[in-house]
Length: 563
Length: 65
Image 1: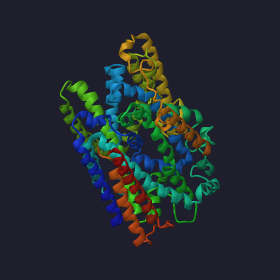
Image 2 (image 1 turned 135 degrees about the horizontal axis):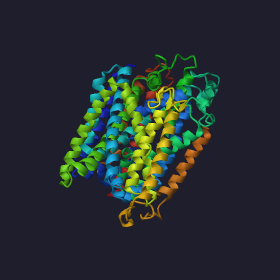
Image 3 (image 1 turned 30 degrees about the horizontal axis):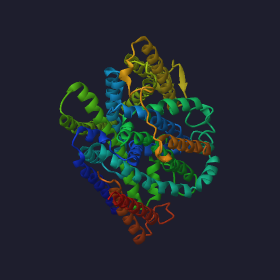
């Protein structure tokens, strides 16, 4: 792919605006709260788009379009099953407690609701996880830019990290959130024309479906699976993902997605920055609307790419040793469809998605470190300006650590595989802890802590006793494994089900055996002891519940339409 | 507080203008599979989006005062 002067100009203008927003917001920062939590002052349309955008990293953009070419519209399960229900749930049922508790972070909520040790466990796990995930996404971007444009890995990593650092350092969370919205618009504007052109060229959705139906996929299945999301879900050997309906709905749709959207501070932080309790509840619900439409600009082009490769147009899927290189599907489509000018927009969109993902991690990391590790355990009781300085320094340190991780990832690829697996252990049981904490006032701090630990451990053991695609089985050995999963995805889903069940069971048992906290300490933290405001007399679209019903109906419709 | 619609509006208006200029002065600029003057059409959409953002921000400032 070759860039023209105009493409570089567009990239430069974008960098200018991103830094300009940070510069304009710098004077707004006078306390650690302004820097780390935006002082709870951001309008709801901005928090909603940032809620979505912080989750929309470059890896998702590149990876999901690749999966579109590999698995077809079933990939949309990650959105229509694996995101929308959880986003609606966190908005309606969990935000009221996050908001009423006045906690500044998710670990701080755990401290208020349970105890110090539960908070420390969550804060440490989360801090390590955010640094590694931003490092891994930085690595992915550096690799991609090197591959398609020949840019130096070091230069692209350092340059993009420096820009993210500059605007988060200047304007804190507000700056990250504002830029995430600009980045979201750019991603939509940059990639929807590609989706429209690729699908039109492939003969529209009907033409694509007809063409795919007559072809045999690289794995030997009929191409009809590419255009149906539910038709082939009854058994693992019918679909290329190797999953079945229970694992999908319970593992992805319930445990993994609720664990991510309801407890991951990276996204919760955006909703908590909203300017009222109602706005905080509506943030994830409103974000669900664009979220359910994203498959059309991210996944569908991937499916179109597969259809195009079957036509005599000269387009072939990018290849690497051992089969198609799905991670390059999106960029090869850009090269085929975008002339100089739009190519600049597409590339800028890719950079924007990387930056929004990274800034999300950095701002969540500095808040958790400053409030839940530094203020809680290292230097409590200092004046606020001390913590503001710490927060700024932590921002720099967080970016520096992510850069280190990007280099570790470059040299030890398998370590990163392992780490990503470890993260899935850490996240999966957490939703059980929150569910019991928010809706069962009897659950105790000891219960939460031991439930969480045993949930993580059981996920590890489940992984050690089963094998999928040659992975796992490190306890029993691959040959003696208790169960062989048809894909790592299926293994992941089932591992998370095990972790969640274990965490819930242990939390209940230990809670019943230990002393609960007195009810007077749980006001504003638990269902039944928290006053929930009903906003009557406001237009329906400004109320969380009617809004959620409309959004849920739309998601249901999409599932049926593409079944 | 900075009204986000202002920088967003300016950004897309400027970028939209650049693309429209590309579409008008270099209409034959095409990639292998491009069938239409994609720079021109996308540029017009971005320009319109930018102007709408700027307009909305002007409108709400007008209402406040």
